[in-house]
Length: 171
Image 1 (cartoon, rainbow, N blue to C red):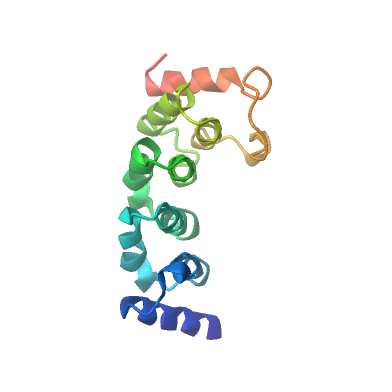
Image 2 (spheres, one colour):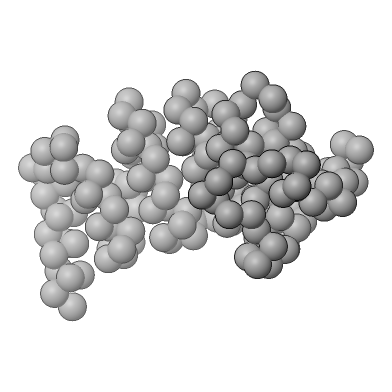
């Protein structure tokens, strides 16, 4: 109960402009952990912040902490358009989390596009592969380790990629 009241006090401070910029990341993260859902519009406001770290934590809270399905489009936008690779990776991972087990055609099409884009950063492409597996409903036990770069000859299940392509209509 005390943690919730602390989070509400932080929200009041944020709304009153009393949170120093260097503390915003921690405050937004606290909202994710403590869940004052009335902070949702305040967190959403950071999705377009010039600071990439604040955009990152805002999307993280909205998608991974609060599982807000209405931020699917936000994930797509981050995945395709954010200048920062960490934020593109967060967008890609968010799609996997929000659409786990759905075999969603549009999501698979976008994730395949990113996975197959040789010009994209390897960690974003690896996250796209993991998200493809999640959208296909594959269990966590089949996920590659996030701590290492994928070796596409050993670590990628190409049968699952072909399955995703068939669903997306891009084979």
